[in-house]
Image (cartoon, rainbow, N blue to C red; front, side, top):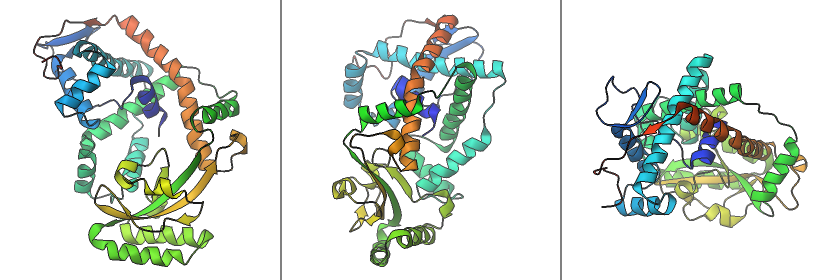
Length: 347
């Protein structure tokens, strides 16, 4: 997970939807907020809200009403938050232009390739990629725009703020104690098969059961390449740690978590995913976090994840303060909302 993406989750509580057309016109007819030479329109707020609802499973009006009531209290407060998010995007883009910062297109392409590989989608299969993103309420163009924004956002933060890694080990140890103390964490690999290929999946599982150690891991990667047709170097078989992989899709019955596998142990069966696929699964690593000490942890994969999360959490306060100062300097003027907002919960 990138710093920019984590900061967005920490600071706003959800991934920012960049499916909104921010270009606008010279004289918008329905302004929701104005600042500097920018106008955020009611249409943009409505589009952002629709995208947010789609990405967070809130398309049902009853679910949306419950969410807004519990999290924001009323529609007006939600609207102000949406305006703030959209304003922050514009302020960050303005600052990026001022600093001469542009999108790191190479990093964006790498991230897209990694996401495709993780989902088991061939690099040139545009339809499968579109279908995969549609399930998340996104289009390929919207996903790319989100990554492009994350690219400049992170560069702006790094250019403007003084991020230091002093006391990193202590910070990471404290993070583990606060979030994962006394837990056992597992890192998984998986080979996905279409439901129609369940017999082939069973045959692969039977073959792998006769192996162990490096021989098991090496053959697992080979089989992933043979089955998926993807380059194994892209690590598409790596579905992540307990707290990262898409459990609701890959393992809706939490069979992997319940199995409490050891490092290098196969799951004794096929996982039936909510996406209609079946998977052969392997626990690549296991970390026991009793009296955790970051420096003493042997798994570099787990340490890298913890480091990313811990530093992002510690930096989030700086980034929030920075955004608040940009907002204050911009003197954002919010227009009173109209009475017929399509996303209103007071109906």
